[in-house]
Image (tube, rainbow, N blue to C red):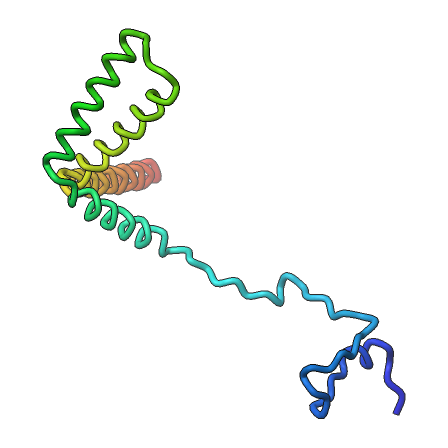
Length: 144
């Protein structure tokens, strides 16, 4: 039975060794619909929470001496900034010190902010639900 050129290019026999140097004149094309890329939708919040927790654990391991040292360094760099004698390297260092202090602050008090944020989200959802209920009641009243 005669085979087409495409069939010959795609016909790999089982008897052929894996190290064969056989070349084909045509390569099979792969459509986008054939590729199944895993979706991580819905996991973003989990990864964000895990990253936040890991960052807080790391930042909470900073000693009091190191924290005080960062506070002092920030003050010295701010003095230079306000005196307009700060160099570019020192300005970059100031940003890093500020970031480090923010991470330490978040490690110490971030959980309280998370609780507050969760409460605010709940109240915002309640407000939205009540507005929807009022709109539905207004629509029913207008129909009468």
